[in-house]
Image (cartoon, rainbow, N blue to C red; front, side):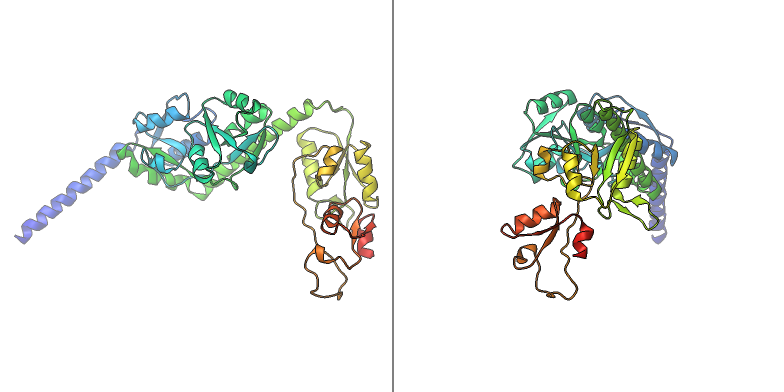
Amino acid sequence: MHHLVVIVISTALVAINAFQSAHAASTENKTFLVSAHERDFLARFIFSTIESQSDFRFEYVAASDFTERLDAVENRKLDFVANITFTKARSQRFIFSQPINIEPTYLFTQSGQSFDELSVIGTTMGTAFNDIIQRYYPEKRVLSFNDNDVAFESMRSGDIDGFIGTFLQLEWFLNAGFKAALINDRVSIPPVSIITNKPENAPLLAKFSQIISQDTVQKQIRSYIESYITNIAIKQLKSDIESSGLDLSAPLEVHLNHRKPYVYQSQDGRVQGVAVELVKEVCRLGSLQCELVYEPNKAWAASLQKLMLAEHDVMTPIADLRHRKKHMIFSRPFASIDGVIAKRVGFKEEVYRHISELFAERVGVVENDVFATITRRLLPNKELVYFKDTEAMVRA
């Protein structure tokens, strides 16, 4: 009797192993049907990477839009689609792999409004943005579009305040004249996965995720995305310069405002800093002849006045205060400047914690500086002591 049990169990194990081997053999060397937008280089890179590190092969099937791709997977006409965001509703329709990537997500607007300022937001039909916004921001209304051109017209006519889309829509919206802002840190966008709806394909998802999750592959994905976005930004920069009416035959004077770490002079006499490197790179990418002018001893108020009178071409760094915008055109901010309160060593230790508490003290500021504006606002009836630059103020 004991021998019989052993024989039956052994036979069962052999049968299971044979089934698993047969299933593995049926999936290896098989060609699977997939679909991706012609511009979705990332999905194509994912599938080609899997091909290069396995015996699987993928054949692309055309689909007119995102919704059609999802429907084809659900109806099992396609085996896999990549870069799909997990939602509770979709989990009822598809089998998801482990997350494989985070896609850069953009807010497109006419004049650079923030997400909080928008009431009606457009998204691409069938994407997860609709569910995410309605779930986490129920006060906002969402309209879905299947055509970018229709979304453009809706934004221009005021039917929607902005549009949320992926980095693959970046070029379209920039070319149409809209502003773009990365909002992954503002809106909770989950990572993306590979999906299927065929149970026999489900075991393969773990292998796909393992391949794509490798450090080397993730670095390649990041590099591809960054290169793609950078190239779009460079094209847009050159287009803006060509349409600006600038006389490109004449050098562009860029006046550098002395402010560490953005602009300063090193011990060997070289002018360097964050703003200096940024200007050099913009001039290089835009094929501009730029002449950098650094006059650290020139009074800030005098430099600002020349800029306001259009006697200077460009100046950096400079804070985009509201009253300045009446006289000057500002780029989008590239950095935030932190201010500090400095006092003499040993003077009233641990007495003051905020600018508004300095009403009884002599307070110095740089004339026409952003922190002079802030100090006047916090000490509205206070007579301040003005200096031409930071060095003169520190010496005093």
